[in-house]
Image (cartoon, rainbow, N blue to C red; front, top):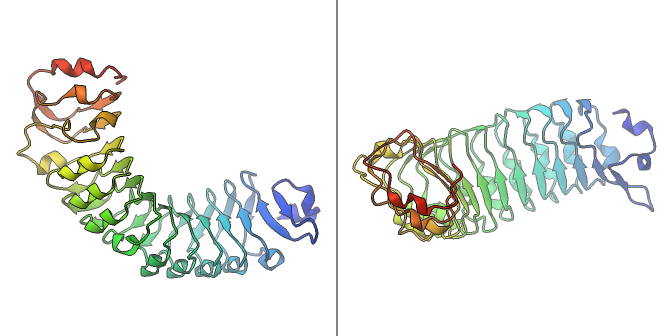
Length: 322
């Protein structure tokens, strides 16, 4: 990196201690930089607290030597071309709060050493090709409020038994992986959740009644799975919910369903978008009370088997745009 051929203080994105010249922050995001970090001398910046290299074209592996940055609090290597494994040496970064490795080509398992970074609050490993599941050591990461793992190749059962003690968690995104099995009842222990995305996996079984414990939830994604059974009545406890994506084949597994009535749920007035496209649901809409959805702007019921006429009170949904 020829950038260091000039005095550090002449470069924007670089912050030094004004008395001793110690480098504390290095932000080279979105500079179009290329090359590898393999021969980068991390010992020269051992007091670094912030390292941001996102939005470049760095390639090769993330070097083990990154574990020498013991003072590091923020590490963002996202949106590059890094490949290979997540180095276990990251577990030596005990002060780390933010770790963003998303939008790369990492194809390893998640190293258990990450569980040693107990100060982590934001972990984003999305948009890679990570395999396996979460290590048991993740149960130590109780300060995390955002976990994004979407669009990987993670498998096995949902690891909710590992993170059920994450009492600060507000955003959990496990979408677009190959997780299988049931949604475990431990989901109800994550009572601070605002956003939960489990769509595009291989989940089976029923939606657990414990999901009704997530009373702060605003967005819930369950579509493109193999879930069966009915939607539990406890979902009516989700009074802050404004986005709900049902499983695509929900209707296939609930062939006795004759109509949908969400008007008795507490969240009906808050719903702005309702998408039940392609569920194969039959029956009529005569019991659907559109007046309970005054904020509804988008309604998609296409590719189902509804019959009879369109209810007159659909005109009560005055905010319709689609």
